[in-house]
Image (cartoon, rainbow over all chains, first blue to last red; front, top):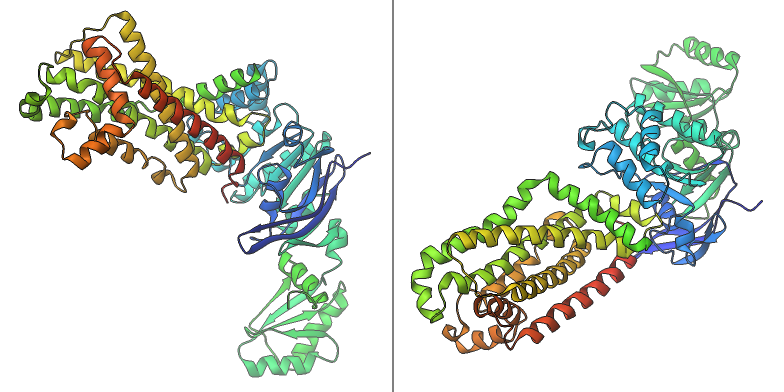
Length: 311
Length: 255
């Protein structure tokens, strides 16, 4: 079966600023695909090209089998976009917002569809209130509900949880999971590794306008070392002493802010040994913490592995 | 057919916006009404001598109607630009809806709301003894020209609403139109102006439009500038309609 979305060597510049330097990706039908990247990586630009909002300078893209540049109308008939900021009409009520989209999509029983979606997204009580009275989470839910009208086979979500509080974020994850289970193809962007991890079948890492890594969450996580402990010291002398005491048995990386990153792997034996070594050398660190791999670590690792570029 | 249906859907949304902020309608009509009263009761005594046999309120009212329309259409630019800034326009742009419908909805709602505010101003003019010799036919012609003028300047507003980088800047183009009204025979006959200004005033688009409206209402004839007025309106409408659609299609998403 053909892919839901393909992009081949997409390029886009704004004046002299090269935002996309040749993005290539494939999204299979029915999967949740996460485009992971930090601010300014080119996530929104990629989404804007795929959803026909802006033309690419180079490369080709297809959505639902239609060329984005040649058949934008057919692409628009196959997708919906939920942008980074909830694009809801503040002056209309929640119900009116839904009916507006239903009318524009020419669906039958627009009133019934609006009522059903309000119920599904827990907005029944607020249905006839103007949207400017809604909370951030409610606006996001309405935004997504509006995107579902007409059952588009492919849904784009641009940073769906940015700016949401933890509870609303959790609700959004549930919504996306429910959507995915109904077979809709979902293309989402996010800055958070844990979000991509929780939601996506496939993750692509976008960095400075190119895809630098691609795979399942498990595959990506293997790229960064897990089981790191970070020790903080009182002064430089103590830090040096600790390096001396640990360097034979552990892989240690000193950092600038009087901290030391120590790789202990998955073994508790190694972890115990680390602290025994410190005790035996009479070193009492100011603080210690287990370091959870972050997106930064993944980026750092990947960019570090190919030093011929960007340097 | 789908185009008409979608345009109406968009127009309904925009009309809901207008109806839910009645203060904008009041703001739109307050300024022209204040100008009407100011010119008639403060300057009218002096200016009235310039207009010959025509009573000053009769001379003035068509220009005030044009002023009402100009101050009203600026809100179309503001509304459109607000939609762009809020990302709602991008939502519509990723849907199978024609650009002509997205923008046309604004044009329709602006025209309807401006017809309403013009009517309000006209009622005030009647209250202060504006009287017309026009028959039903001339009134219809006046309404037709006023509607065409509203539509043309609304598309101008749409163009500047698309072009503006901020909501604050979106409506500012209307000041140029306001200035054109002042440098035209809207408030005083051009005969009293200095020669350079007079020749500008006699050849700018507001002049035939205002004079044709005045001729229709005051003397009950279309006058000799009706075709020029019509040509300006249709010209402005065509240019800004096409330019707006072009700009809309090429405009990069608000980044």
